[in-house]
Image (cartoon, rainbow, N blue to C red; front, side):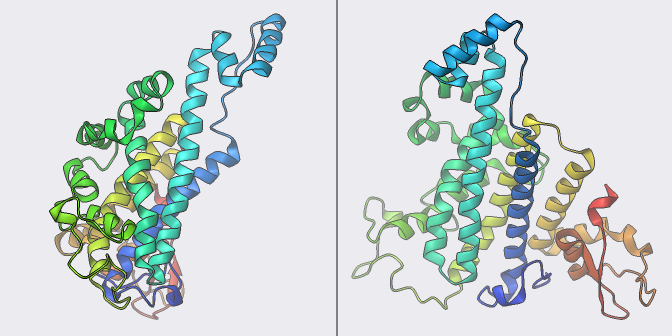
Length: 346
């Protein structure tokens, strides 16, 4: 597995362990693609719901009702329930995704500075709260909307969702392009099972609380406080984090993409490029057999010639990762980095 493809400036990666730099860049790639999609939708105001009144009297009544209550209530009172529902779901999607991505961005930046405990605190909310609500919206839109509009907030608390977490994750995953790549039960164990030594839950609890005694799996060791004596130079937490984070963010980014698709259909080429780049990138981060599978998928690009020395493109693991994540490659002949519009293929 290549160490880095320079998606992120080298000076920002100096604190990330060498063998985990590609995983970190891949996580940032998934964040950036989700953020780019959100910015495009906001710029086009794709989330804004518009409709025409049937007559002037109806428009006047709507304006009067909206002044007393709110726009959504006025839409419902005027018989525009479908439009009101669309507006509610669109606004929740945009706001929740924005909140989610802000936390993820800051957590990844903290990991670049060895502020691991701060990073874990920042990851806890988007990965255990936002991810679950976004998954619920994608996998069971009717159920989410009904609970949100008729039984909020008591009907949408985390304790309510706890009872049907795997079902929520499974239904959402089935509606994405990574249903054959990821496993819903793995995501559930990785994020929520306290007894999982390779999961995030113990890390989250110890990052938030100085002392934990409620469960044996989370118990603070004697004469200690959680993490405050941890040496910042230790790499073990990085290994735990990047063993799980790429898979979780791959899932989350596809859930986000699925929700944006419901707001407005994206360009087919851009959609297919995201699917291929995100999945091949994941295979390359996984290494071994998956890495070999990814490089074979890119073998057809060997017909590309370097514009400087005319050498054929060599699909090494490094170049495969460069093509997928940065849309560039390093020529095996002259060693120059050349741009390549990988997304344009789609």
